[in-house]
Image 1 (cartoon, rainbow, N blue to C red):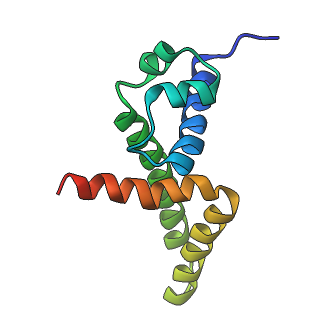
Image 2 (tube, rainbow, N blue to C red):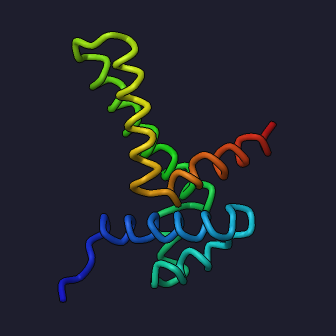
Length: 118
């Protein structure tokens, strides 16, 4: 079996973090929980991320970039404003259907983390 690349390991850790954050909540999650879920050594998480906060931030940034890209793509099309809004709403709803744990983390945990900083 081929050795996992750095990109694969990083993705493996992010995907595991989604599952753990969605089930335990961000604040109750330890880095070791993420490592266990990913099936990697504890220290490897720190090789790719400085903290669990950075993991959460990365998950948010990835999804936010996808949403912005979808909005730009829809906005460039010759559509009525209502059709553009419908297309963006469809993207968000499809995101929920495709990866409900990720969307839960993005909406609940990112909002909670942001609010904890005032």
